View 1: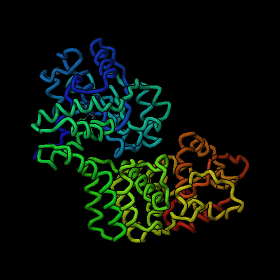
View 2 (view 1 turned 180 degrees about the vertical axis):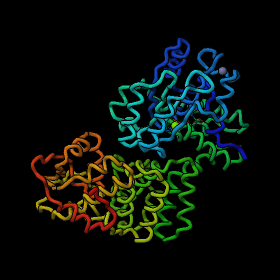
View 3 (view 1 turned 90 degrees about the horizontal axis):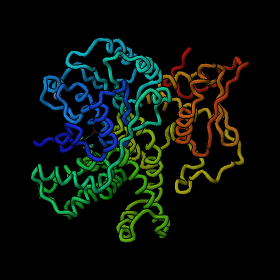
Length: 498
Ligand SMILES: Nc1ncnc2c1ncn2[C@@H]1O[C@H](COP(=O)(O)OP(=O)(O)OP(=O)(O)O)[C@@H](O)[C@H]1O
Ligand SMILES: [Mg+2]
Ligand SMILES: [Zn+2]
């Protein structure tokens, strides 16, 4: 069996990395002039070369015969570093995000490299580290041993604390344009003896949406569908399938309560190179279009489809009840954010589909507290604010309980601990105000990014909330009330620090 294209064509030296010329030139220069720094930050979208470049860099700084900054691939160091070794240490922060792991790293950094001049730590998905892990890492970044280089990589730069950012040399990887992608694809196909026409090449390159890896995964599916002789019609079929037919099939499977076909359709959608978050967003967009068509919208500036596609969409829209579409829409729109934070997005997506399937689209669980926006997803832009009725305090507390659960489920430990010290939540004029009488918890929560996360989470349960604020109640040795109430509502699901 052939290796996946994106694995087979992982760049082995700087010259094989495409579309990141500025970064490559700078890194090569640093190597040639021996002006290295101790911490680098590679950020940017998925599949644009961050990890590949980090690995090449790690070899290049140790190579004893490098030419033009590239690792030679032949010297003793290059050879030893191509095998599993203890000098290039790759850490996936998504699964090693705890403070213990970073402490372990801090002890080990002091041992000198065994092969070359430098030990290189590549910390992938660094935004997944917990707060205490970040703090531990920071200490090492402040005074690293001379023989250590850190390369932190992330797709979500906004989640890194400023203290980390300020200690790294930052490089922003860019999405590639369609010409650069199709030129690369042409080389790959030629090397693999896959035949193609120019139109298919362009279609596949475009479907990559700027990511080399996504493009190569899609190319893989197309090539295997066409038995390595790609023609435009088949390419269109495979790529088109991922966007429209697959989504239709997933919806139909849910509506028909057909689990077998549900799993097959999801697999087929993902097999076409789609990332699960992208798939979820496409599902939501697609369903929104169906709803609009069902309620009679014909204006193409509102509908997000091409005029030539209208009839096809209308046909699909006719297959479903509008109520079913409404609950499907709100489900997929809601889990989009969760998918981002989830360690296992595929399971989360599948479980959302299964939930829709088993309750016929009319979910009513603790997370589906009726809100003003529920049932009217099309206009839930949050503009028609100012409700006359003052909401029940218990409803706000329930929403808060759900938010706590989400934070906990997503392993944001420090944040979750701080939130456990919240003694009161209230809603005033669509603003959620969170009170605590614990100063250190207040300081942890009172941070723009955390407040943003809170607002996003709160909005999952009530779209009418427009802001979140935290207040420090200095003199209020306040009540246990909210904790007691929440314990009642959620029984054992929330554990409070006593
Ligand atoms: N700039 C590039 N030049 C050539 N190939 C690339 C480039 N970017 C990605 N690729 C291809 O995609 C694969 C994955 O790339 P890589 O792991 O470096 O991406 P990444 O930016 O680290 O992605 P992620 O954010 O998902 O970790 C590589 O093996 C290679 O086939
Ligand atoms: Mg990577
Ligand atoms: Zn070498």
